[in-house]
Length: 466
Image 1 (cartoon, rainbow, N blue to C red):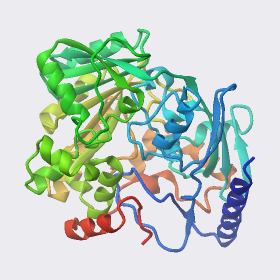
Image 2 (tube, helix red, strand yellow; image 1 turned 90 degrees about the vertical axis):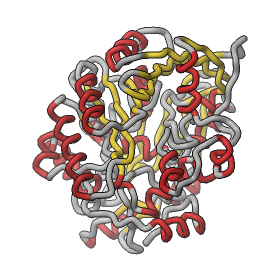
Image 3 (cartoon, one colour; image 1 turned 90 degrees about the horizontal axis):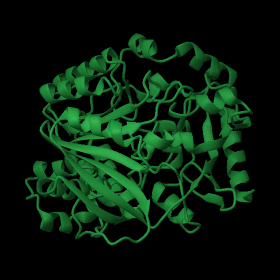
Image 4 (cartoon, rainbow, N blue to C red; image 1 turned 180 degrees about the horizontal axis):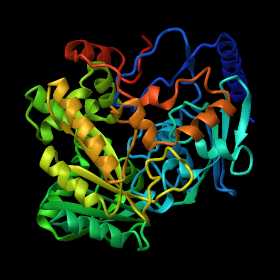
């Protein structure tokens, strides 16, 4: 085992023992965040794990990797590809970390097949609230193994994880299918998940126009090629829209990393909004000129620094497949926000805070991200309506996004009794805030665009401790 890793974990353990003895709550500092809630840290009462950012080993024979929690997706993919291996699920933003993906319930276009990112792991090394270091697997502390994903660091600090890997290829053969209605889109996804493909997701540009995209790992093929990571490339969603306005069905070959991180430039499509806000023309030339500012690491810094997230609806809603149509109709009527992202997920039965813990054979994640209003009260009202319709339809929110649930309502959705028992058993109560405290929006955020811009320019990639 890596000596420095052991020393770092012992130091974290020592800190937690101290805080536990003093009865003080702590926050975990990662150095960055993909939360849409404004993140503020005090200079005391934090556990800094930003230095746990190493891939400790890749075992090509056993197809596993030992990784620390602050390893980002792009570094993880780059290293595993040296062995022609890949994590079964890779989040679409290169800056999302291993720990963030596990704790945040992340999924992607391969999740119909493999489940959430957390379902790709075999073991966690966890430092408990009292400083004890434990291993959690399906056989050793299994309640913690299944309990810790999607709980946002409220049960313990993951300091290392054992990740299973799969063989991969150099390209993704991507097929675009034009759809003309919500029903057609959902039916096509339902058909595709039973076929021998590796990736599925979709984009709805309106209630009458969308695209479902199915990808298969591939070697070099005699197909048109396209890339998405260069400054001169189209943003992926714009490229997909152009294709389905010309073709009912279209195939092309995408380099693997370009496919995995296809939504990085522009952050899906929310990167369009700064152009509107600052009255900058939105065209290929302007996107090229400010390309470094339009990647998700920087966009998330802007979101945090400017405090503008409450002017947007930023929600991922997981729904049983037979309820997704009702939700799409509701969103169309109430928000008129487009594009909308569709991503099928395999349901889970064990991780109780997973957004995919639903009574269905297929979960449809609906990503709704768009500008709504500068009025806080109207924003709050719409978010609460989204939460209410989600509950009515038997769905669950992905909790990286804004959660406005009253406490009693939140614990009617989630299993408070088993969660509280885990917090007691694994000594989390005295040290870590519970998940409701961590994910609920407590304050009205006051935007400060000039201050935020200066902050990002001075430190574009790191979330400051304040």
